[in-house]
Length: 514
Image 1 (cartoon, rainbow, N blue to C red):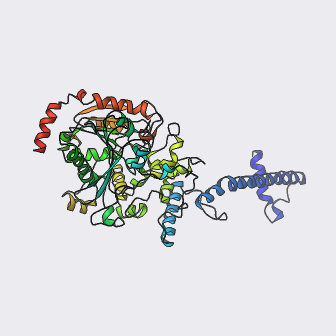
Image 2 (image 1 turned 90 degrees about the vertical axis):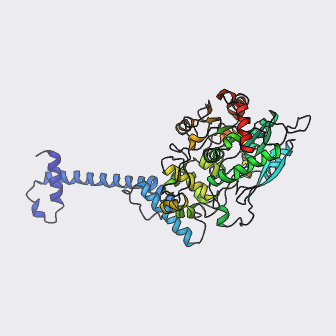
C-alpha cells in the first residue's frame, strides 16, 4: 500500500470512537499519524477560511450589491448569470407595479444626476431662436397632414450674407432621425452645423419635424396625452407627414422647384418607405442623400436589439416603454445603458440620454462643449410604437416591413398573415448612401444590401474614420471634413453622375402635376 493511502486509512480509523480498531498499532506510528493529521486538518481549515473570505469579499458581495440582495443570502452559484438577470428583471416589474410607479423606476432614480451649466441662454432656445442668434433669418411654417396632425417646420430661407435677401431656387429638405428634431441640424453652430453650411452654399434650407416631437405636438381632434394621438410608427410619418411637407414646399415655391432630400437615421427610413409605396414622389424630388441609412436591420449593435425578443408581444413592450410616448428618461433606458456604456463621471449624462444609449457615443469626435445644448433639445420625443416597429424588424432577421399587428391583425390590415415588405426595388430616385464602420444601427452589411437593391444609386460613401458612428453624422468635430464636403460635392455633381436626365425629370413632373 502506498504511503498517502496508508495515512488516509489510518486517519479514518482514528476518527472512530471505538479505540480497539487502532489499539494494535505501535504507539510511534499512531503519534506520527496523529501529528500529520492535525497539520492537514489545520491547513484545510485555514485555506477554507481564506477561500470563504475571498468569495465573500470579491464575489458574493459584488453580486448581492448589484442585484440588491441581503448579504446573508448566498446567490446560487450554479445558476447562469443571464437567468439571474432575467429573474431580477421580473422582480423590478413586480415592484414597480406594486408601488404604482412607472415601469423600471425602481432600477434608478427618475431624476438624471449630472451637472450642467444653465448660464448659457441658448440651452433653452427653440430652433428659430438659435438660428436668429447666429445672425441668420429663420421662419416657422405650419403644415397639416391629411390625417389631422399639425406640424411645425423650420426654414433658413437664405444666407445671412445674401445681398438680395431672396430665397434661392436650389432647395434642400433636412429630415431628422428618431428622437430628434430640426434642432439637430443647427446645434453644432454655424461652422459645423449642416443647415448653416448648406445655407452658405446657396440653398434654401427646410427642416422637418415629425408628429409627436417638440415642435409637432398637436392634432385637430386628438388630445396629445391620448393613445389615439401616439398610435403611429415611422410608416405613418412616411405616408402622411413627409408628403405633406414636400407638397407644402412645392406649393409655396412652385411645382417646378427641385428639392434635394437629406435624411439622417429614421429620416432615411421614411424616405425609403415613401418612395417604395407612393412612387410618384420619385419624380417630385431631385435626389436623396441618406446619412446613416436604416432600412434592413440584420447586423445591429445597438441595445435596441435587447428589446427585439419582446417585439411579438406588443402589449408587453408598450407596458415597458410607455403606452403612448416613448419616455426617454425612463429608467428602462438606464437599464439598457448598463449594457452599452462604461459610465464614469463625465459620461453619466450621456449614457442616461436615450439617443446616445440607442445610437452610441464616440468620445474622440464628440464636442463636449455641445453637451448642455444637446441635452436641452434631445430627445425631442417619439412614439413607443415606432421603437416597437424597429424592434420587430430586428426580430424578423432585419426584414424591411410594415408594422406587424400579429396574424389576425395583419389579415385585417393587409389581407395577409405577414406584414408586407417595402418594395425597395421600386425606388427610382437617385440616392447616395453615407455609412460608417462603427454605426450601431446602420451596418456596412445592411447598407450594402440596400445599395444593390435601389434602382438608381449615386454612390455608397463610407466615412474614412473607423470610430465614426451614428450620431457623428450630426455633431462630430470633423463632420464637415469627413462627410459634408463629400455631400456638397454630390449635391452639385451626383445627379448627373447617374445619367439622370433633367429634361426627362421636367417632362415627368408635368405629367404628375397636370
